[in-house]
Length: 510
Image (cartoon, rainbow, N blue to C red; front, top):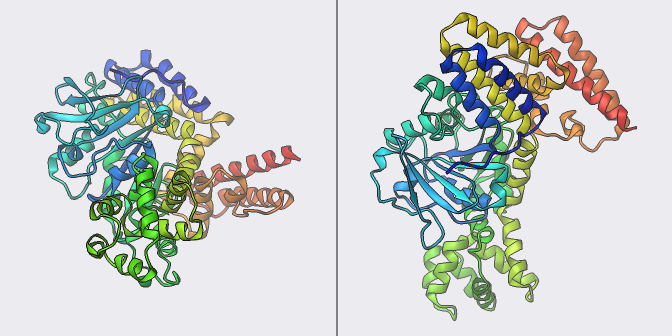
């Protein structure tokens, strides 16, 4: 089964598709086959890989984002494999073997992919899960194994096959690697991230076939935010969520400019409340707990053991179920809501818990950074694949022919966004060194689509934005001509034009 052809993400993707179509008769059969795969990828939804260390809660977050508990969260065969969740007209699971064979499996009785597939995992390439889910119409979510901590076979499968699918059998290994890989990545980190967190960076490299991370195609989330000890984070005033926000800001400094932002989230609460796991029976059980005297409640909330063993009117089994779905933080938050509004409905309580999970913030950032930029992200990834395919051909004439065609495309005014994405990747990866203040200014263009935020002047009146855009456009033009290195000058010309286009846009609104 293949996914239904999708319309191209936008004009930039269409321009790159036309470039590929025009070049195919002019290149070798092997390169032409690679271009065919690029065309297929351009017409598919944006592919976002969820990557991170083992036990960081990736699959739980995947379930929350999809809104259905389909990804296994317990350790099993399936968690060692790459699993692609994409839109389909019929719910089904396909196990794709390394020799190209496919075996169709039903979803489990609980609606998730079977924990154990009943096949030889060593012969499995990856798993395709098709869902009649609106979220997946324009976004393919790819769940990866916990990279850096698993067996070599799992990592090798991820590096070689993530994003390539089973339709690339006509390509050689080098060409297949050139077109494989997710177009965007969601890092999942925990509070243990370090300044030299090479595993997180390795996860991205594996997920994108070696392409560089940058603020236009990478976001990180601080998962399990409820496990942070607030007293260890200065400035939190003992509030767990505030501590998570502060810690996420610090982690952003560690991971930037590789990622656009780091956002706190409580994946377990998000999954339970967004996938139908939280029921009216759970709400009733929480009401029973809310009716206990304050001393008993506080004692029970000290630890999971006390919560399930302390004697009270709510059955132990019911409390254990609440703990599995919400953990102590979510239970405490629900009790606070019930204290403030005893008559709240089960649906409204679920919404309050979902709000407390931080999932809405993650989705908003996904929309702002990934969905709103899908056209540019897909087009840029496609151009990178085209360049890699030409380089892999070994024919200098073919490589030059492709290079010239790309330069003609990028010279067009409407392709400026691709130039900007290229510039952002160059500076964020360190390929072009910039002073810290200029680096921050360039990266603002990748962190938001809001013009005022791109200018570094959120909330300021239009006349100030117009004046600032014109002033910075002039400054970057001068910098490009005087004082910049050749590599910096290339970036500076792109930034100058970005400011100039913003100036034109703002003037047109008046």
